[in-house]
Length: 292
Image (tube, rainbow, N blue to C red; front, side):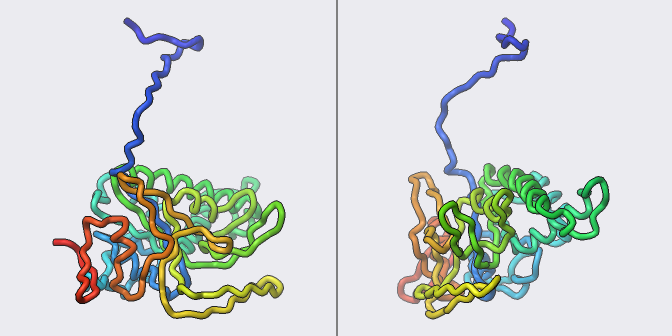
């Protein structure tokens, strides 16, 4: 018996209701913070992490759990190279965690890619500035193409990590603009690479000092902050002046705690919440290690 047809003579679609099984999928994680706060160090503690080194921030980092240097993927020199890598269905293994370092460099590479492949009024641009307000929209378009490729990896159980510097930006609001600590990406009201990455990610966490106090003072285009405190931690919750988030994960729908310790280069507490079966903690020596 032939398949039923619609009025346009196309095969009728068949819809079903099923369970949403995401337990075996990977996570989309963005870690941001000021330079020197330990983003690469934290990423190196992830199980089976491999680095996509768009910048050289992690070239001297060693995992405090294994003593080994970061394992980089060599040969990535342009955004096109990165997209080609992400298109390879067999390069990444389900037990690996790719770490892209970092988002600011990625955005610069995308700008170069746009200059090379896009035109302005039919002519090749000599700088990204010539794209004007359309420039951010082009970046968003390329980011979404990248996200589609990474989503295929996520569905295969591969967790993907991005590292990002921190910036203080003025966010537009219907009632009143506000200043916020966030990822170092472009942001404008209609086309925002920053929001494109933030909304897509499952976890956006910030490495900060636990008792850091923000005393904002606007002086022209610059924003000054007063910093106090020494205890380094990982914040996962959204606050009025901090753009962070964490979705539920795992088969029981666990949530990351709002503050996670990161008081030394070997503190794997963050990853142990996400992958408890891969870590063990020695209470006597107060050290983390991978399970045998």
